[in-house]
Image (cartoon, rainbow, N blue to C red; front, side, top):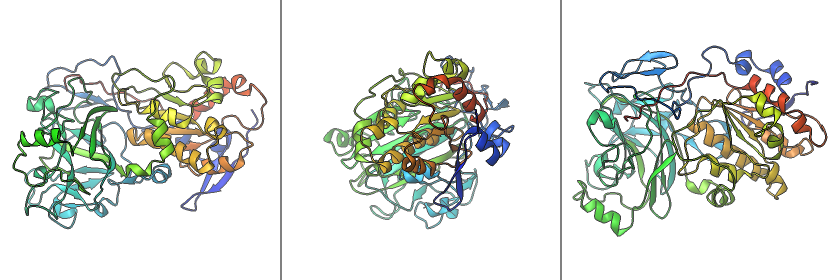
Length: 494
């Protein structure tokens, strides 16, 4: 195939971004970006569906990135399942997300009852937040400087043996009873080593519970010790809260309902003044010992999601999804419409060239909201690919969406993937060549090595070109993909 020319654009930071074919990108990017130098990509989150138990908790270990990691409270450097982002991608910023765990964490957090992050004893390194070590003179919970009336909070949390922590919401140390600790002020998403504490997985103090009030289901999925679980808390403007763990919604409760207030009255918080009071509140992270780490903490207001995406994405999958089950870690996740279906859809020569380690969520008539619904279904598995491929906006453009709406929709797809899987590389195939304004807008998302905008079908190849060039598509994707990685064995005991 004749190399296609590079298109240069100027991004928000005024540095040039590049859009072109693989050949063009090879001229403009380091080899490590295209072919994956050793160690360039970390292990995706580790749940093969056929994972086996790892033995007794006192002696079990996790194979992380090919190394044996002992089950002790402090993991070795580099243990885990992918790098923590130090700065939000353009797509994440465009979609309204604020990263709370980057290098500027001190601008977002302070000690409970204090004024600085340093006075809390918490440490921030490489995008990971950890409480003060045992015996430290200064230690406290961590509380956000900002407060929110409603929010969508995403975070990754990892615990060692006996680890115990939590994420509080609707709390405030500047109002209410003086000196009251965070755990007496509002609901807690429990972060815990259930086995280490001898708790059943569906107990009111188990991981993912609304602590001491609403338990999670027993069949929740957990990462091994030291690896990161994906947590999510959604609080809407009406007071309804949801807890999610590893892509599955565990519980949904109306914090204003008499039933919830009755449950509080029957809990250890019965005498807690102003517990979960309505109105704007802060987020807090609990210091209950050093055997916990947080990373990839993102937050945004639910209203930041456009109405058309919010309504349509919740309207049903509208096509093939995945059955409920453990998280899946394919090498390729394919999110696309007509062109991608013709080129590398199931049963095509392109699909055969791509290989079997593929998760396909596309249909010929797929729209961005439908793809979002399939990617983040409340009862479906969490999808953590090494490489995701997004075919941008073909059906949405045909249905009358504006350029701004389509770019925002593509950004939402990128965000859903990259917040859950920080090591994932996203390849965005721009719209048809005759839609230059939309192509230029999509190009602004180009931010290698994590997001690459590249034309997989350059020029006007004629009707049916995608099908004929399917094997070539597959070859390009293999060249641009993140390298295959080891996967950590799941731990059903947790």
